[in-house]
View 1 (cartoon, rainbow, N blue to C red):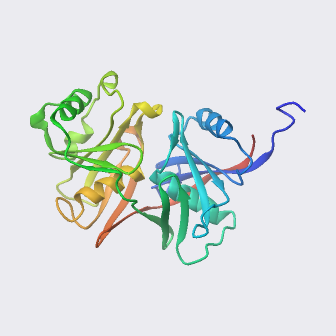
View 2: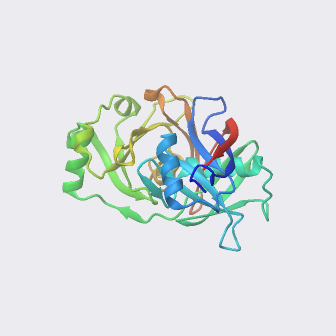
View 3: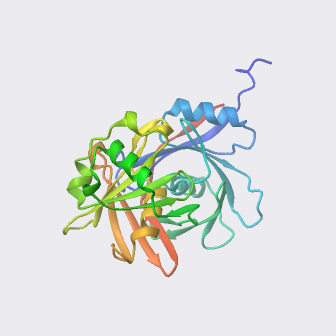
Length: 281
């Protein structure tokens, strides 16, 4: 049997995340019933979609989980990512998935992640940071080179890594974030998330996510980064509940709702299916 003849069709959805209107958030490609796929098939399809992330819904191995998720960028697999978590939960529910309890429980490389329904939106509980704390002077210098900034431009930095490798950079305001023109050749392995406050208005901050090592220079709207930023800043430099804007420079209109409840940080937003079909893999 040829490779072509052995392919099997899978239900497929493309979900726009962090936007209530189509084409303004961050799309994730979701392949249903993916247990029979190999890791190479998953990686190949992720490269082909060329989206920031492509996910695969599988049978859970942990009895506490409703489903298992594998998450791939064009450059490789991630243990956790935020907008794929919400988009995949949306797709699983839309395809008829029924959680064992009120909240959904996702199994992924980072462990179990809780997803709750908030009206018509979804929110995930930020997983524990795998790396946190101060950023060394050499790393700050490398960050400044990559962002074409001086040390005086940076208000604060911190490691806020929950799987993808994020380091957080706080700038003086949202305008400084929007004005950034990074030096992509200077990034190396850095994955940099930048945030700056608005003086007033319906959103509190502007966020940008730079991750050329994952095959995408700038991610449109990023749940994992906003989770790390919330764990770092919510309740201290930022309110305990706020809305972040992301994707403005890329002509998107992402809106991410971040809420700290005690030690837990929740990251939520709207999700909307834009493509439904079948894919042969």
